[in-house]
Amino acid sequence: MTTTLRKGARITGHERRQLGRQLKKRYEMGESIRSLTSDTGRSYGFVHRVLTEAGTTLRGRGGNQLDKTT
Image 1: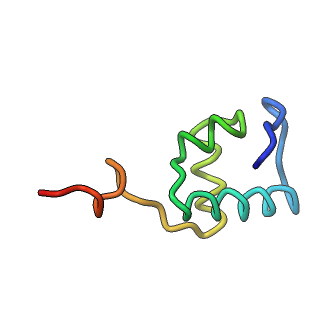
Image 2: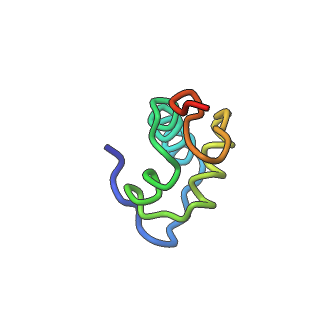
């Protein structure tokens, strides 16, 4: 869905907000940050930061807890 970004390229302004909206939508549909990093070619920290800037509520560590039985 998202094209691989050039490594080290600065993503700012409208382009960064647009990327944030795309990644937020995918993350909220269940994709992991690791999956998004693989698809975009960017680091975990970059994707995490862009998601946070987009107002995304991040899931806790360990995956979806609703799918696990105790």
